[in-house]
Image (tube, rainbow, N blue to C red; front, top):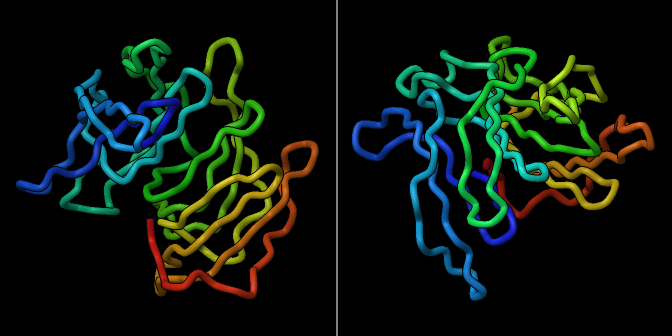
Length: 212
């Protein structure tokens, strides 16, 4: 899911009846006290997907990658990147369109928009658990995603980790490396050109191992 202003979006996922993928998109309004009310169904994804990654950049919402068959879990992956325009008044969205492709089929990754670039962090890929960090330019006129370039990778393969940006610092917490659930905290700094420095491991881990 993703949040924007006073709205939160829940995109795709798996239902709790027969555990099939769904293509539904829901919009909830965040009240002043933090309650989420007035859920409404929006324009669905063109296909049913789970374990994809979503962000909002400006008035555009992106959904990247995911699993195309929940019963095959991580064996059926897509690299499609969908985008839809957000109505800034009521939070509704338009039709979803393919605006680009991840380097390979990916699930449980993190994506982030920084200064007109889409960044992709780790994830479970067709080639296995990945330590790769990459970015691609978002065309400011067409919205299409350009070619991907490699940046400084994670210290180890990683997916289902939490990630956040605070100023010029990007922080990664927890996750799974394909063998172990982790409590590690890594951080890196953004350079002026948008590349990143080597990842540093904090000495104090999270209180518990965690995946997101």
